Length: 467
Image (cartoon, rainbow, N blue to C red):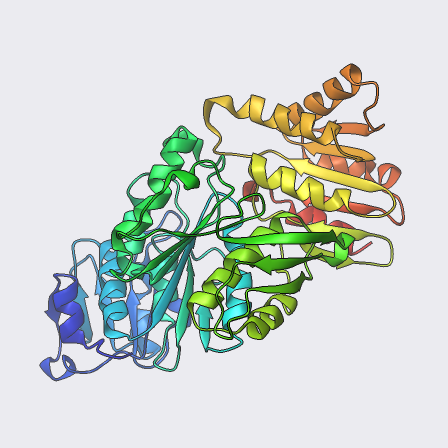
């Protein structure tokens, strides 16, 4: 890893070095917090976690070939090289910043209440038409995951696409200090993490902390249809690049055609590409109206990164879903929309709209949404009311909070004679649902499965996929 010598790392994390002085000028081959991933030349950072203490694995890491470890504890009698620090978590971030500064690489930072991961994926597919891209994998978007993603970068990588997730004030500033984005994308300001951020204005304040460490010549790309983001007039003394559907003063979509579960086609307008094309048609092969916004954001990043309209068009057309994120699974019996990685009111409504596009019977299996603050019951109820406005045949809710979704849908049905006839079932646990699933779910159903990650709805995906 370029410039990651034991001497430089000791200085970067204000540590104390113990061991052979001859090792100080050696570079580590990789950095990890997972003792199982240690190889010859690695640096292992021992972190005291909720489930285990990484210090217990230090001897095993040296046996596996680690060049050095970061430790919060003194290691009496240890003959191998180690750096003692006050906080291993802070050292992780300090070393990520050191490594980021050692690399000549462009960074796209992405945040927002909804759509971070799908936008990250779409941007990556577009940029891969011209560059070697490294992107955030899985949920590695927080103050541990982002540094570990940065450590994966190598000299031949040309652009990093980094997802940045937060739940409180100050976190985004710390993440952006490490990432130092050249391009900062904010998808929207919705209703997430209200326990700490309280209001959408609080979410706006927390998300825009990203711009404190945007490169001086960096570009902000914002959703022009978002009523909170539209209030951001300047970033680094420059107007943001805006995208939208209703918003027509930047990059915008027209001629939107719903292709059902096969996706959406539309025309991108107002984009200044490397080939001077300003209007061209694209097809997003992933269903959902919200995917138009993700594709517009990716097109803006592509244009800012020197791609042609053809490269942008091709990249968007190659987009594939990932497990738990609007992932369509077709079995002999069902079409399953696996969107169970996480949920909030905005994303849940968007997912309901996706299954609403399907042909035949439409089933929603929805679970509780967490971290919504004191108004959590009303926010669930509102999702139920929204479902009442759609053509959903069966609504199944699981969990204490999710029963308020069922209440909202039932109340809508009672008070709106024109409402679609929806069969509503509510369960406390997945076990309770599984006992009756066979009598509710039918061959040919299109089934949306969505809840907060802690609800473990991937279990339902597996159950239905294997039938």
